[in-house]
Length: 461
Ligand SMILES: Cc1ncc(COP(=O)(O)O)c(C=O)c1O
Image 1 (cartoon, helix red, strand yellow):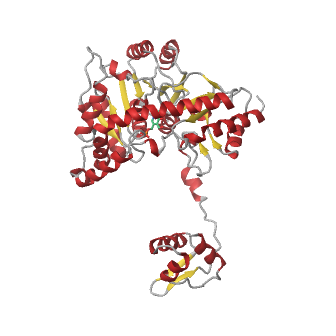
Image 2: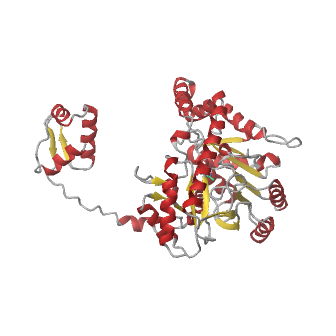
């Protein structure tokens, strides 16, 4: 209600605001909207309500700077140097073309399934019960069965009791790093890798050991050397449709890395974040090939069901499960049963399969549209491989470019890109940007590619 705000700004201190009924008539707004606007002005300290008398423009409106300096002494210096907050989580104005986000557009989600799942969940026991801390048994069984469905003969599938439900993968990563590696312990990570995993590791205070990786995964000799050199207990990996590279490991590489982990008595933490985003390939998790407890497997539903249904399942076999569950209990005790019931409802509807088939076609079309537009308008960009799944293109810029300035100039011209530096746990191997092809308005991709190409042409490199 900009009109009311202007009126208040122009009014002398102490002036009485007209009644709600008058404001409704004057601004053609509903009483709810007027009340909301008044609450906002009150919380901003611009107006004050005197019960039984009315609402008044505040007499003293000069904002007094708050004195928070005492917190500097109380907090002390930063113990674990955290990476900056991610570009992928930024909310941007509607008039820019947003290619930076980590999430699929709402139009790609199974919205009808999600809404009716919430209605049913609200009517059921989940709305009033406390679920077990490892999760609703039926949801545990679903995650176990999903992984079990890709397990080859000769490998025993996971049991429902091997599954721990988390409020999203991010908290499962923090818990796993804390419970398995611990503060100060070494953790191998592909480089580049998911910024959130880097953040979780930094927050736990583990020592990140980067292992170079790309669209075909890491060199198995590098992995073996890193384990031998550091004595690391764990390796965080994304063998299918990695964020950010879109890369996929061959079955041979998966077996080699598994064997190396076994030899070193170490865990592999497999993040299967894009399991539902296969385009030309159906991912077979590394965890399906091992029943020895070496692979801790993480699958999230946040992106494929809804960002409002933050549910992930962690499959962990052996004594490690107790450690992980103990940490999860310390952090959050249990995950809301309503969210778990809603997630389970969505993924067990027959329409879930239909939705996933449709999503595959939509992602393929969007990916190819963006690649084609970049080829036409920004031929200096380099794509190592067309991703067979996932949500992003990982694009290399000419070497001499100043990435931060380039990203800023793209944004000024109307396109938000994610600078690739955020995905490197150490120095970046080159200037990259990550472009999301699952955001809103794919019709704008040609414009976005043109703007990126023009911005590139203005930069030395
Ligand atoms: C590789 C990877 N792991 C985990 C996550 C976080 O998943 P969630 O949203 O379930 O916390 C993301 C989100 O972008 C991701 O890209």
